[in-house]
Image (tube, rainbow, N blue to C red):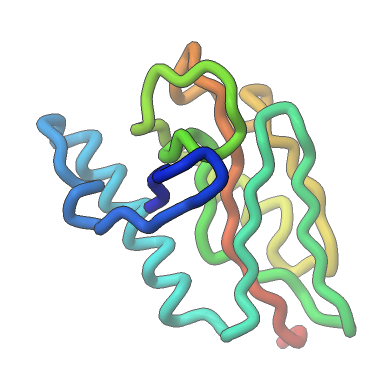
Length: 142
């Protein structure tokens, strides 16, 4: 996951320290999100794209050359203080429906738009500014 070392830099935080928690429900969601992004990195084609869009903005996923979108991982919430400033009450924020919604809206299309908002995903952490993080790749239609 991402950790700030200075305002203008980003460093990787080891997964084992990210997973330290007292709440087993929180640990299960953290484990799921970490594994989704790790598996996405290892098993998706090398042209995988990772994009982040701040709350109230619209994310655009695109594939060229007649290829279609395959969404590998998605989270609407907040796991980093480095992205999309604003009010932060928690860094353990996950909308469990994120992957299903983004896949439903985007998989198999050449382009799609998804708005990063509570209206679309619900509000997984009230009082915290959220963002949508998506990993995807493009492939030739089957």
